[in-house]
Image 1 (tube, rainbow, N blue to C red):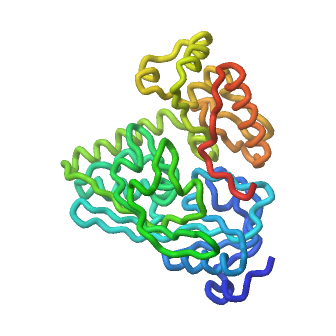
Image 2: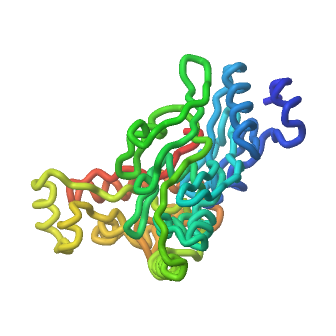
Image 3: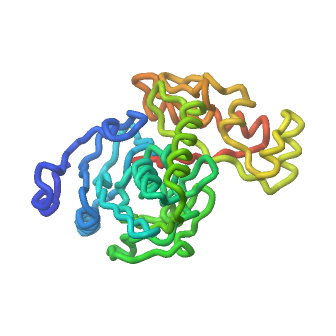
Length: 324
């Protein structure tokens, strides 16, 4: 589609038409977006969203592309990639725009002798994506040190900036209000704690070492495909125990890792087309080269059906589906 005149005037050649989304997401899958913009500031994100709303143009936004699976057909509308990357440290107060890489911020805060974000050094995405999905790993979650976010609230055909406090963000396990709305995260504030720099840096290396040992890096992926399963119903657990021995640590946490469930269902190494369940970690679906979103979705469906039939557990996707 041709770009609306005022969008084209505002962003010029940076506003691309029929841009392959596979170029911009980690799993290297996805058809063309009608329009694509890399927004280099929060103001540019706001300007692009307001223009899309004025034109009645569907829009979507993502950050680093690590937890995103675009459709083979691409996206009919405007895709905005957040590349706003300003950040600051003031005492124990840290502010980072949505496009700041999470791993970068984790390292910079550790180097400043601040603790609270070391776990995030292993995240491949950005701060905006981390807030949206309440990303977490290795014992930490985004919400733990989160204070507030500057957002662009989109409602009733208009958009306006607002500060959302931690309580207003509706954080849950890999969940926030932003997953259920069109609202856009522009930046986030965190409150960290002072700690010896050497301790913080050692924790960074510990996390990176665990990631290297546990997670595949030999082929493109979207990161963890499914949420881990929190169980409240003891009947579900009883059915699972009939089939497998459940580690005590999972019972104490009342959380079953999706990768472990996939392994128990003997799904590691399963492939459809060029999409394959990693042999190293069951919660990673790999693009072996030329995989399509259809391949991945069929594999997702097969995994969910197998886990449901064998264990009575319904897995939920963690990735953001774009253009479906």
